[in-house]
Length: 379
Image (tube, rainbow, N blue to C red; front, side, top):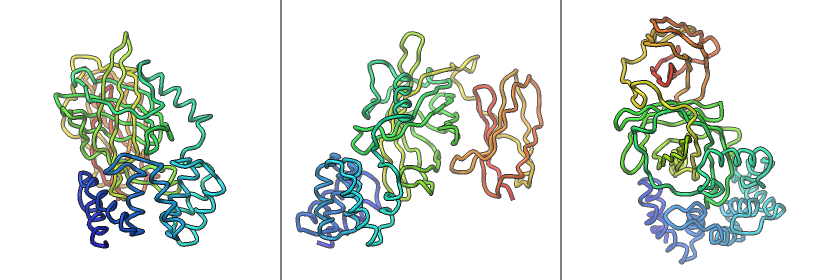
């Protein structure tokens, strides 16, 4: 029995997601033999839909089974099910009881949940409701954002260039409920099969986009950020962008970009919750290089490493809006300077960084619809 359980854990934690189905079968066999840990792990995979069809009802039943036998991990997740109404009728008092039991047995995540004012799946009202309505406006009328929808990838690189605004929607594991909506602005430039640009989320995160446009989807290259969520209110969690399945729709004068964003959470070695992009183009790429990212020499910065000031040299071929940003390696903006509109010519721009901590950063120069970046180090 222990060998079956150990094999399942090995398949999940030391191999890729393609092994989830085999791991689920191992845990199911262990659960059939009444092994408590296998039962919990089977429930966990059912709860999130890893290696099996996502099923809150069966997950809640198995978590309850473990909770009544004194297993702290099952107590915690059964408490989550009761608090959110996942697979069982929502019951605040029962949820609190099981979360307290898990906490008393040392399950730290239970303390975080008990301190949270609302469950992950709170009633959709107020700010979230308004964001969902706004996100719906960034979609063709034939598509709804109320439930997670899988998209067949169909994007032509020659048409995707431009600036898009809208929302990034996060769903619970079932995909039936929106639990978070963040404002999003994405600027994209395409050169054959290479896409570069800027991803700016909720006015607090801004990271360069680097991706390959493949037949099976948009494949991200070294794109990641850290942010908080319902389960990490006091600490950030690293999310790595893996792939996107997108579609571009032209309806009248409007251009819509929508689809699925797949992220991976290294700390848990598992995929992130379902994410859906709902964007409408607000500014088309213009000029002879409308949909081409111009490969230029790396941004010249000096000194590097630097102290309290770093200087960058650049040249503009025409008048355009210019701004600079300094980003941490996980995408947090620590410096932002909108330089304004500059005419064609050569420029030397000093950046004062007295308030920036020592560390590794990405310096980003935005000019017109283009970007240039450089890796820099502050001593």
